[in-house]
Each structure stands twice: as C-alpha cells, then as structure tokens.
Image (cartoon, rainbow, N blue to C red; front, side, top):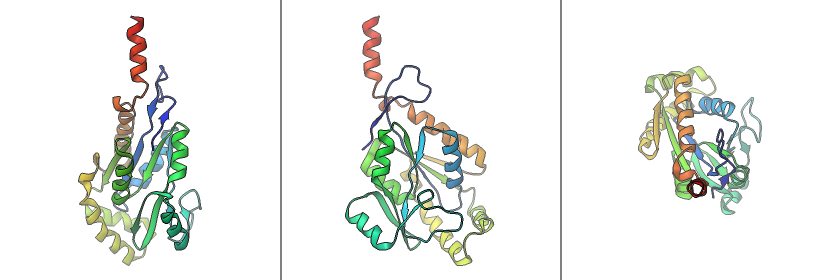
Length: 221
C-alpha cells in the first residue's frame, strides 16, 4: 500500500524513498496526542491519519479534523466495505483508520502519522509490514498517569477508573513495538520521537532510488 515519495526532506540528490507509516501509541494520558501535535507542527512532510469513531463529539472538537464522527450503522457499512486499514473497540466505542485518505497522502509524497492503540498498530503492521514504524510511549509511573488524567479534567471518575484498568493491559503489549519511550519530560520525549522518525526515513531499505544513484555514481567513476 505504501508508495515512493518524490524525495526525502533535505536530500540534495533527489532520491526517492518509500513513505513511513509512523505509529504512536500509549495508554490514555501518557502524552501521545501532545507529542503527535508537536511532531506535526515540526514536520511539514508528515500528515495525520484522522480516525473515524462512533463516540460523541466533545466540546472543542471538529468533525474531520479531530475525528470523522459517524453513527454505528455507517461504521458497520465501512467495515463491511473494507474501507478501514484497521479498526477496534475501545471503551465501548469503535475507532478505525479510513484507507482512502492514507493512500492519497502517500501518493502525494508525504509520510503518515497514526495515533492508534496496540490493536490498530498490530493490524496496520500485518497489512503494511516494513513500512510501519511503531513507537510506544510509557508514563513514568501509574500514579503519574492517574494524576494526569485527573488534571486533564475531561472524564468522569468512573471513566478515569476504566482508563486506568485498561492502561495495564495496553502496557503489556509494549513488546509489539519497534521503540519504547518513557515520557517523563514532554520536550525530551518529543525530541526522541522526532529523532526516530528522521532515522527511519533514512533507512537503506526505504531508499528506492539508491540503486539507480549508485549505478550512476559508479558508471561515472
């Protein structure tokens, strides 16, 4: 499903490469959404995959920007029509990644950022394999995670309890990721995530134009 991008950022030789499908996952409250926003602001070649969900829109959210808000019947039709790259049940609601917008972004020569859970990361890796880079973000402690959820003040007490119960299960899937980071400092964690993205963009296996460049190089020697 991944396509070659015209050229990597900062590459003076114009070599093509395959796009990166960059996944960020974490328990709710561990900081992945904050880091995702910072990464999008810092990386103009990176586009966010906007998920579809059956949950209700929250104050301050915008349909099509934060999520594609759909009813259950519409979501089920999308599943039946194979319109999702991945989808899962989370906290009694359904979330999924629409396939067509991701293909469109890759065709334009950009990388795609996914803010999804371990189930989605697993499904995406099964589909796209080596083009997927999975980063899992841990909180420094479960106590700090609970405090962050309280400070966020967007959920009722019973919802926070459910998120904490789910967090332990989510953390148990850490070994299904390529990189695991502890977010004890947002700026430091963000810089490490950005370094991972830069390194993955430069992997030899993604440089589809490298062979042609080397042949030209050696022919001219």
